[in-house]
Image (cartoon, rainbow, N blue to C red; front, top):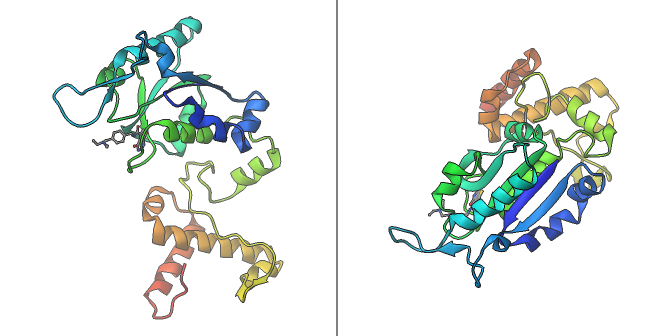
Length: 263
Ligand code: 9D3
């Protein structure tokens, strides 16, 4: 998959591209991340990318011409093939697992990173095919958001994670954002590793018992309880199995009692 990132800060991406999953995906050819300095698409001596907002107000806005020119040159080079042009913006639709999945079906994505107070609206209306936000908080620009999109999408490319065993593990997990069957998933159950006691903090006995069915039930209950308390929105969306319903009723009943375990 080709990612064309249009930015005034190409150096911003060096860290994330040179480590971990994105580095491996690039080396193995699963992801080809091409950074384009927006200033290379300007035509004035000062390489101007921004100007004052019409109508007044604070700050500066990206001019349309360099952004259009940058994208048009990518389209010219890819003659014939069509690809989504995504503007990262606080006004975009929210990124989630299903948006990432949808984007992962594409062969190529253009990611436009804005800065300052925003980008001339004509980019959103007449150049971009999609506008994406990564959440309801204020960032200084689209670069971090573009990095998040690339990470989330690249993980979904077949073979990009390399370690097939761990992919399988993940998709076989019964509660997971990536689980099939239309389930929206629950939060993860808690994980522990050695030592079994650390500064007086003990690993739950059941995990050391070797009783796989009991462990499975415990994990399922933990995941449900945490999801119910912290992310009831996820529960509301998910199709509950019979076991989910039984365990959830237990959890809700326990919640009503005076002494309850904290999740
Ligand atoms: C909505 C806030 N705007 C009020 C006047 C100002 C503004 C804040 C931040 C304008 C641009 C930006 C830069 N942010 C992004 O480019 C951005 C972003 C974000 O801030 N939050 C979540 N996702 C994204 S994707 C791109």
